[in-house]
Amino acid sequence: MKKAFDRYFGRSGGGPNAVKYLTARKHSGFFVISVDDVLYFKAANFYSEAVLKSGRSEILDKTLDRLGQILPSRFVRVHRSFIVDSRQIASFTPVIGGQRAAPKNGRLSRRNGPFAGILNRSRA
Image 1 (tube, helix red, strand yellow):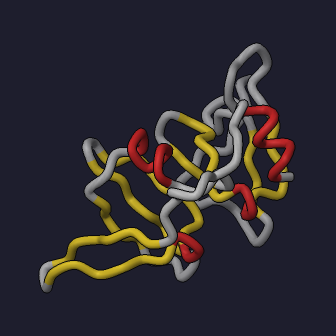
Image 2 (image 1 turned 30 degrees about the horizontal axis):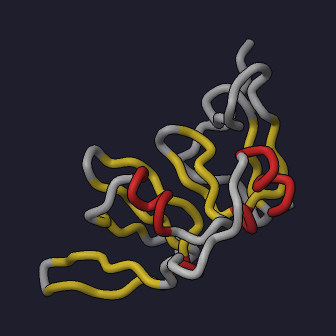
């Protein structure tokens, strides 16, 4: 599935500089989040929200554009507001004539349940 996404989105490998950890800020200071624990990232103005496998979400001080530059190649931008770990995707239906498999206009399903918070509807 990863190779299919890479070909579809025109991405090459993650590169040696892809991050393995991100920092999130809380009242008591900073703490580290492993990229392997993230299901997807959601845009939140000039920040982003990391939704973790545990169900918890954390606010990061990076935009989705910046995350797209530093994350491993398995993370795919499926919509202007979402970056998803491609290992979590069971199937997707691309937008006809579009450049991305946008959840707003297509379907995106997760291996172990739905992507909570990501729209999964088709145009009627």
